[in-house]
Length: 109
Image (cartoon, rainbow, N blue to C red; front, side):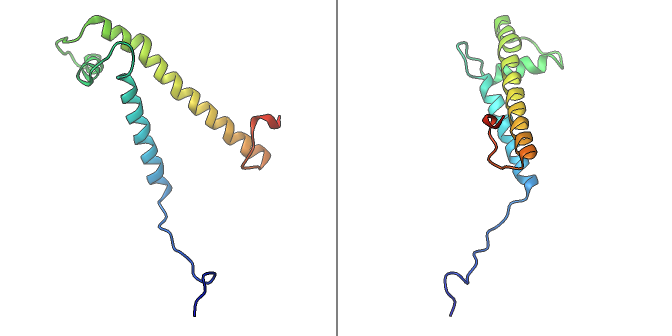
């Protein structure tokens, strides 16, 4: 007769590549969604039209102010937010690696 201690529950392990791919897709979805937020709304059609107009010639169906808001305000803020997040995660990983402590915090220094 097996006791509770003898039994092992086998969990399905998800490969790291699937986790990384899922997180990358989630990041791209959040980036695209964040373009739509703000005081002056930009519709998805306007967003993709403005972005594609930089690559291929498209007849303009948006206002010039939307293009200015997108490239001069929202895009730099979104990219900066992603870069800050990357730098914070790299700093945390380096703290944990240097001090060999998985709970390393900035107040150690």
